[in-house]
Structures are given as C-alpha cells and as structure tokens.
Amino acid sequence: MKAKYINNKIDIKPVLDKIHSIKKKNEDGRYSYPAFEFEEIKWTLLTNVDFGFDISEHNKLVLIDKAIKEVSVKEIKDKTAFLKSFNEIITNHYKKKDKEYWLLCSLSVNSLPIKKITVNDCEIRITGRKFPTKFRKHRANLYNRKYGANETDDYLKVLVKCTGRDVYDTFGEMEKALDIFRAFISLKINSSNEIELGDRQQKPINKMIFGNFFTVHTSSGATFNQKEYWFNHNKKVKIYHLKDREVESIKKSLRPTINRLNKCSVKHKQHLSQSLISYVTAFDEVDMYSCFLKSWTSLEKILSTDSNDLLIKRCSSMFYEDERAYIKLVLEGLRQYRNKLVHGGTLNLLYPKALCYQNQDFFYYLVFNFHLSFAGKIDSTEELNLFLDKKLTNFKELKKQKKILDKVIKFKDKFNES
Image 1 (cartoon, rainbow, N blue to C red):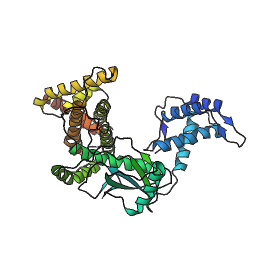
Image 2: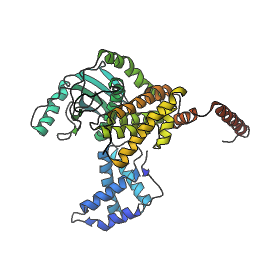
Image 3: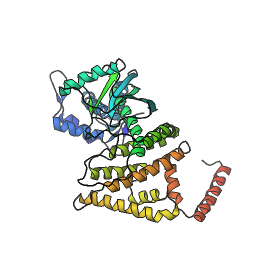
Image 4: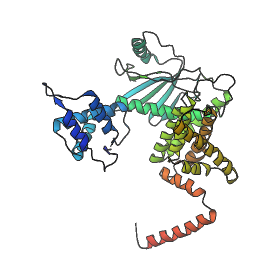
C-alpha cells in the first residue's frame, strides 16, 4: 500500500513553501525549524495524508518528521515530488525483518474460561495471577524504575503474542486484537441496565477493563527497550467475578463468534472490527455523557452513516413490523438527546446512563443478529446497508424493482455490456 492525499484536489504547495521559508541550515549541515511552526506544519501534513495502511501514531509522527526534513534537503516544491519522496521514506522505514513481540497487560476479572485464543493473527493467552517467569523480572524492573515501587495490580494477567516489522505498529495490532476480544465478552457480561440507589457511582459500564500498565517484550522475556511502556488512564475498578452463567456463555460462544468474524470478507471484517473497538472503548468511559456520545458514534460506525435519519431507518429495519413504531420512538429519543448534548452541553440534561444501555442494546443486536449472521455471505458493508435500506420497501414495490432489474441484466448480458 502507498500513501496518498486524502483529497487529491488540495495542493499542499503552500505547506512546502512554508517549510522552505522557516528552515535554517546549521553549521553541521542539518536543518532546524521554529518549534511551534514545525508542529503546525507536521499536523497539517498528517491530516491531509492517507498512509494507506494501519500505522501507529508514533510512526506517523516519525515518518512525517523525516518527510519534512527531506523537503528541505532535496528542495521539494510540488505535491507529486513530495508524495514520491514520502513513499520512499515509508518503504525504507519498513525494510525490516519480522520479529516476535509479547504484550503484557491485565484485565479486571477474576478468571476467564479460556487459556488461549487467536484474534487477527494475535495469540491471546490468559496466565492467571502472575505473568510467566521470563517476563516478570523485566516488567518489574521497568515498573520500579518508573514508580519506585513494586506493581500491586491483582487483575487477571494476559499475554499477547504477535509478529511484526515494527514494535509500535505491532503493539497497535495487539491492542486492537485485545479490544475485539474484550468487546465480544463485554457484550455478553455487561449489564443490560442498572438502577442506582444513593449517590451516582463513577465507574464504567464495562465490567472488564484494562489495568493501567502495558509493557512490550521480545521472545527472550526482556522489554523491547529499558524505558518505554504504555499507560492506560482508566480508573481502577474492583475485580468483577464472573457468574456461572457468564462463564458458560463465554465458554460456549467466544470461539464460534471469533470464527464467524474470521469468515467475513476482508472489508466486512475490517469494518466490524473497527466498530467493535469503537464500542468497547466507549463503554470504558467513566463519564456517562462521554460514554453516550461515543456509543452513539459506534452505532454510526457500524451502520456506516453520520445521518441521524438514516441511522434510525437502518436500525429500526432490523426489527419486526409490529415493533418498528416503538423502536423508532426509542431511537428518536436517543437522537434528540444526542443533539441537545452536542449543541447545548450538559446543562439541564438528565444523566444518560440508561440511554448508554439503550445504545448498547442496539449495538448488540446489530453485531449478533445482523452482521455475524451474514459472515462470509457478502463482500462489503455496502451490501449490508443496501439490505437494510431495501428492507423497509413495500414488498410489491420490491418485486416490481426486481422485475425491472432482471430485464436490465438480461439486456446487458445479451449485448455483452459490462
């Protein structure tokens, strides 16, 4: 995959001119730039370039940094030359051999009824209360160096193994795999609603959230370097003890569900995976206003629309005809709340925790009763959206449209038209 401009009609020449106007050549032959202007240029380029593949934020910044310096060194002054130079930088950056990496983290549950499972080429292992010995010392040293204390996290320990050319991109892939894993489990174990008695509790709806400390290791057990780690700012919650029925549900459904995800076409799987990640990170939020907005965005994502009218139409079309009037009212209420929150803020708005649960219910239905039931049967989400859009069409009208389409197909076939 090659990088390209998000909008090819936009000419980035003014940005290139800006680089040349602010650059300063130092005695050692290197170029320097005023810090604030350099940052502005960097982010202007970042928001106008499509890298062409999944890449970590760290590497995006590194590669854009190199690209700006190449503009100065090679006197690049037009958009075509910049894109060519930028793609060469990307190609050179990834001229590395694949390497095995291990991500160490934890989850706020007492146990899980699986030991090992693969999600998107990442092998997830549940190790209990302790990490394997070969990783433990190196992780402890890094934690102690940062905090001057021993790690006290008593969450369930998790390892993720993945192979990649770059540690930062591989970390991103492992994190995504874990979020998909968490999403499928969360959709099974999260409450469908809660009634709060007394003071409002500041905790996420997700029962299973990450611990705060993430480390990446090589196959020897050592951390990939002696100073870097990832920190999750989720508020620490009590360990959730799975109920017997939840254990059975996970044991029975998780592998078949992931197998169905893997059966999806490439485009469908990518779309559904992104939607699941959007869902599970939304329900990590402690603030329910944020949770509501992010979970509404998850519905927009899975339904491939930012039009509220189309979202309501597509979502309600999944239900039986005698339920649709009520479902539309529920969705219309969610839409009205979303608009008030976005345009007016939280003043005089009811706390939306119950509405977050409603968003979750619709998302659950879309995943299990719709998307996964079409696994391997469609090429793209556009086909699914067409199904939803046509589902509300009158049956006689659909037959009429089919009759016309059959004639068109017959005509084009007869004259060998593409």
